[in-house]
Length: 168
Length: 168
DNA sequence: TTAAACTTTCAGAAATTATTGAAAATTAAT
DNA sequence: ATTAATTTTCAATAATTTCTGAAAGTTTAA
Image 1 (cartoon, rainbow over the protein chains, first blue to last red):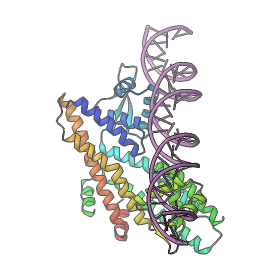
Image 2: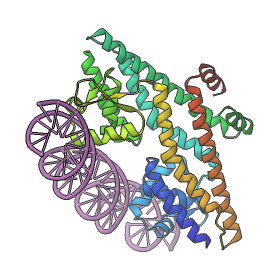
Image 3: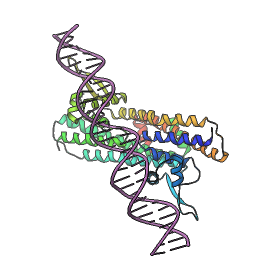
Image 4: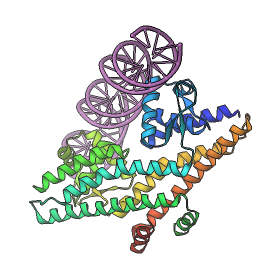
């Protein structure tokens, strides 16, 4: 198979898989393209390669930059901007984890904290059940946060990696 | 605040948070309602409590059952079915993790395996870069799978919990 | 300045996903 | 068997999310 064909396959597949990760198709495709390209690409090159509109590419590049998965680069003497992906899988993983924590875990924690600090009126049995639920969920969120931190640690640490493997 | 009000708040909020978890609103709301109710509820009660159509409730209950987060129960002498949530947060977490692994990790692994076992033609430098990317991603997926298994272990194991905390 | 190169924004269109509700199917009681 | 209660399915509709493209904005060079 030609390299180009393989890359294309990777980009398309990554795009559809993105949806199940809660990441939109264009963003995932652009990320896949940049990952599979050692040097940076300009907006026009990206538009050309995966057939997306300028607006779409612009918006999703901004988002990828927010996630710290891509950075802008300027080439001396060139007017336009080039975009380069972070190619280090561990650092990619870390940034995705952080973003997920921020978007998925923190709002839940806020909700739970708020409800936990509320006094309820009504049937004592039912109140007890509800409050236990809230407490258990809060514990779980906390657990997940610890685990995410652990993830980060694993990254550049082969010993830790082996430990996880041994424990699991 | 009245208990009912708190429950309602919880259900609504859980519904919107669901979206950021890639779970649809109705499914998350139904789950929240069942979690906050010690005994089982019938389809009609659920429809009534969160104002959803019969079809919607039916579909999403089936999905919750697939995820093993809810089970059917029949009450002696009653014709209709009642639905009860699994109230154990650890077992909930485990089932969600398993489902996520199945839906988010496995398809990625399949894609990577397929591409890794392909011979590419083209610029050797670029081929090398692409293949390294694939290998790194595959390692990462593997890593995540180990971590998920670890999650499962943590559940009923307080010692493990403390270990995670210490490591992270 | 002016103009050309490039980037950003955003209203409307398109695509995708979720929801309804009524008809069909199933189940259980008479 | 017939009927009534309940569950399931699914075409149509609604809601949400994503994408486009052209206009407005910005930057750099002459």
